Each structure stands twice: as C-alpha cells, then as structure tokens.
Length: 98
Image (cartoon, rainbow, N blue to C red):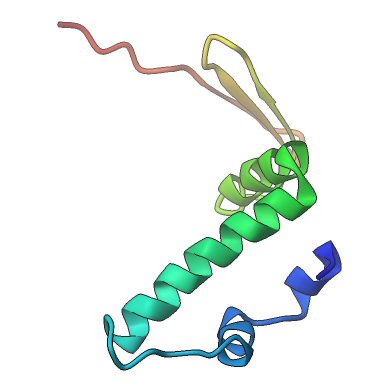
C-alpha cells in the first residue's frame, strides 16, 4: 500500500478483498464503520503524524466560506482568517467563567 492508494481505493473494496462481512457479528454497517475507522488509522500511520495533522487542519477549513487564502492560529486560541477577496476575520476564544 502506498499513500497514493488512499485517493483511489475505497474502504469497502479493501474490506471485501480482506474477507468482508462476517455474519457472526455486528451488522454490515457497524462492521464496515469499524473497518473504515481502522483503515483511517492505518492511512494516518502511513503518512506520518505531521502530514496527518496538516490534513486534519485543512479538512476542518473545508466549510470556511467565502474561500480563504491564509489562516493563522495563535497559541492563545485566536484564529485569523484572510479571505481571497482581502477581507480579514478574527475569531477570539470564548472565555467561559465559573
């Protein structure tokens, strides 16, 4: 398996070739979900922790609209987003008091 295989192989196809669904266990959906979770951990180990962190950060930005060009995160929790149109949005952490 290569890191590139992650982009071309479906979890259900890999699972099928490894033996697939077992009638003596959970439902098909539960078994497939468990396999997908294990496969996700395999891919993460294959690409390494730094690459997986980069992918996770980028995936969390998929929903940011309009399109962003740069994101800065401070250790204090402030997030600054620069959008492609030049607009800048700063998001401060919420302080929760007791």
